[in-house]
Length: 233
Image (tube, rainbow, N blue to C red; front, side):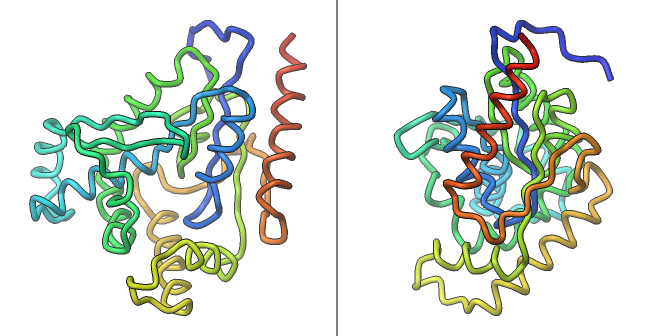
């Protein structure tokens, strides 16, 4: 596959893919900070679109209307001390896009092919000059197929549900068992999506984080990144 023509400036692009709750965002944010790279949370972009459509009562089944309204939506990812602030048409929606309501429906909007094409184009532009750590579900296979380092993070459904549950507000009123079912259903939707489904890239390194701490995962990926960089000198 032909690589994008861009200056690498001594840096590489790192693609981190995996199913819901695998810890991609936490790890990608940490790795980017330690490398001095830019962190791009592709999932936040889909969540911002989902949040926006919910405000307008536009159902994901109305793909034409979703795509039409998406043209009027400006999504900004702004680095901050917590990793990244997300703005939708200038409004800070960082917390809103992590709600249980958005969690439950984002995969249905993410199945819209035209929306994935639009957001993937924006994501590629962000990575043109290298030095980006991007996480998602199709980064290594579709968005940045030429990324120098590709990681596919996974963990058991039970462990992913436990992690997600620990992050949630008690007021959201969901049990761990319900969360396990929802994550399993989300996996199925992501894997069976017709356009750009969740699959492990052939050249990705699979990392099962079920029994690993955040620091262990981050350290491991940092080692891989430094090894990859050394091979490019």
